[in-house]
Length: 322
Image (cartoon, rainbow, N blue to C red; front, side, top):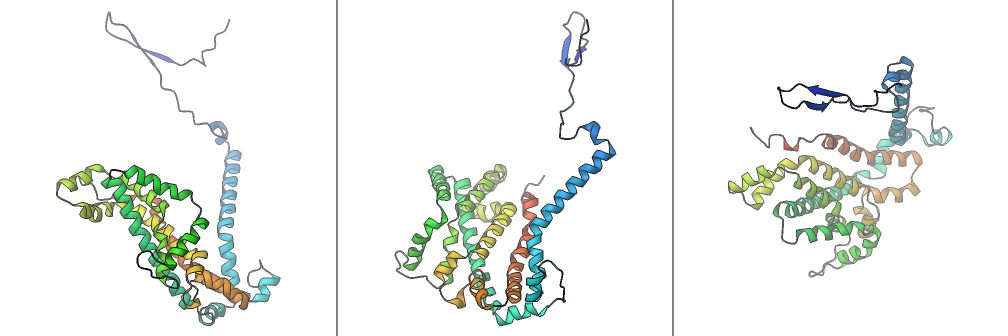
């Protein structure tokens, strides 16, 4: 009869003192790092090359899928209309026309709409940051008596579709409560409603909940008030989440179409997201694509500048001193 000992765990017997019972402990087992390729097969050259080829192919597919439309837009923006229609995937069959960018900026008046977009995006960012940081600070650090119920009410608004809120918001800015002032055709109507973002408040509160309580308590012992604690302690430690919320706020305001269209009927005050669709009906294709390329430069540059906040958590650097 044969006994299979491979399936049983190894037991190590440690010698003890005379008369003392011997100690038994299990030998540490190697971690189970199983995957779609075993360790033995991974050492084979053919398997390694096939695995690398699959990973490289998947990476190229994702790059083409993500950057393909932007690269095609950049190419078509400086390509004559006839070349784009006849050879949409060819790389400048009859040469590039760099004058399209200047024509789109000057003839379409993109400079004015560009400034309008910057004003709306900047105001929306400021309002959202003020509301999100103060609300998150109050719910997380100050901890009011009914804070849980307030936080639950804030989260409940996330389940309301945005389309349902358009009519109440429009009626509110049309006739402001208490003041009876209409904000229609003003930039205030474009970015003030953006402050009511439950998503940003939730992000801020979750981040503030994870801040070191030792630093906050030490600041209170040193005599810091609520405002000083918020301005000098909490905000400097919250740089990562501030960058993340800033990216969300600016990109959302930059691409918003329906709300600016409703509250800014004057074309001279409308942003790029509203004016470009209206200009597409009376503009050549190459000029219109050049205008689209110009309108996408700021969001892309803004994301590239602040994307490091998604990848590093250096908001607490220097907060704790040894």
